[in-house]
Amino acid sequence: MQVYLYDAFSDRAFGGNVAGVVTDAAGLTSEEMQQVAAELGAPTTGFVVGFERGTPPIFEVRYFTPRRPINLCGHATVAVFTALADEDRCPARPGGASLRLRCASGIVLPIVVESCVDGGVVVEMGQRAPTFEMPVIDADAVRRVLGDVPLHRTLPLEVASTGLRHLVVPFATAADLARLEPDFGALAGLARRLEVDTIAAVAPPSRRGGAIRVRDFCSAIGANEEAASGTTAGAVASWLARHGGLSFERDDVVYVTIEQGIEMGRPSRIDVRLGTIGGEVCHVSVRGRAACALRGELAVA
Image 1: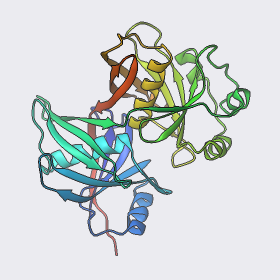
Image 2 (image 1 turned 45 degrees about the vertical axis):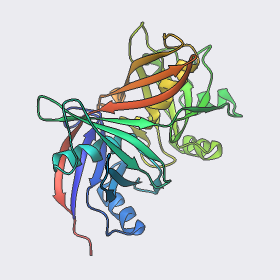
Image 3 (image 1 turned 90 degrees about the vertical axis):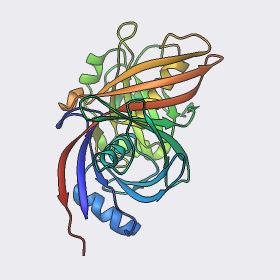
């Protein structure tokens, strides 16, 4: 089968987060997809298992880490639809072509694929409206497993979700994030106890209009740390808006940039759009590019 590795949320290879892509996986079983994901070794691999013609057309995608299936993955979604556009299997227009993504859970999300003047594409992925949950947790214990760096004094630890579940752990500055030395085994156990997919260490913007800095630890589901995470970006931006870290009017559209992967030497940029009504976030989407780093054939018996 034809397989790809894309570097998502980056416009060049060796940046962003690696995603495996199989654009023709309709004949594969779940067990075979899991084996392929483990063989490729990317943090997540997206498999296109179905297509429905219509207005808009619907692509059905399954996501697997090297260890297990997951319901959704933002960076792999950007990679999948970039690969489909590169194969001329989905439209891409200067103003954006509207598509749909159906996940394993049955949720259907809006996708927009926009062509760029340089021949590439930008993929925008809609997400569910955010939900929040205050976890029963010892903040000092979280601080210790992340490397004993002081937490932000006022922003709370909270579980945020726009698709997957993320424990958001706030710090004061990007320099604090760089000092973290996580105990990944302890983090995986913490994530399982809280039933979250990732633990996101976050530093709010240092100035008005600046970027949010993120490190996302995913040892419970796959890689210890990922260089770009689309579902995490949507959840983190929504969380910061909820707690007054972003400036906007009651009924407004807010644009914010997430920087991630800096500490890994794989810088990524994730652009987030939040729609608000009455001061509450009601719409979330993330957008970014992906660069193809490898094309090849995988022999499957």
